[in-house]
Image 1 (spheres, helix red, strand yellow):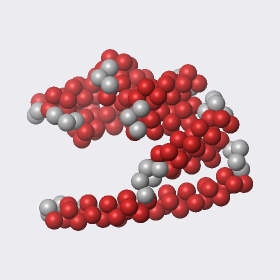
Image 2 (cartoon, helix red, strand yellow):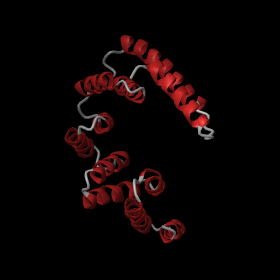
Image 3 (cartoon, rainbow, N blue to C red):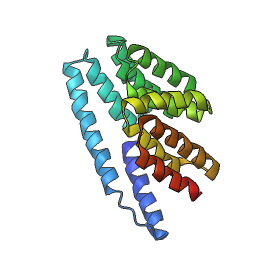
Length: 203
């Protein structure tokens, strides 16, 4: 999507929210977009000087993905992988891009490549868990979440937050909350278990 069109769309969304008495200051979102656009320009210059730096291509791909310039982002990730096929972070980022583009089979392949290169990378276990959860492969998703949470407890916190925010109905919210409760049990966090039980009792 065109950068300036995104800013215009955000401003229109802000007006619609205000008309419905919902106050939301989106200036911080626009400021982030502008910073990323500025960073994009800087990275283009750096890449002219260092065209064989796979980390720069990967970072540039991330910024383009954030700016929703998906075709360009994919090209940058592919350039990074051509230079360094063993970059597990780039495989993960490309997987995330494919997930956003609803290319689920390709996303799973990239996540699995990343994990083959670095089985300890919690971010990819979490991302793969999200993909498998979306595909309703719940047991596989739970296993990936479990690995992610054991490596980085913050992912359990994120999952319990998302259970309430993104669930489309009470049944899905309950399933996600139970999943979070089980993950907090795995890492031994009784306070969070009690907190989730309270939410479940109020559903």
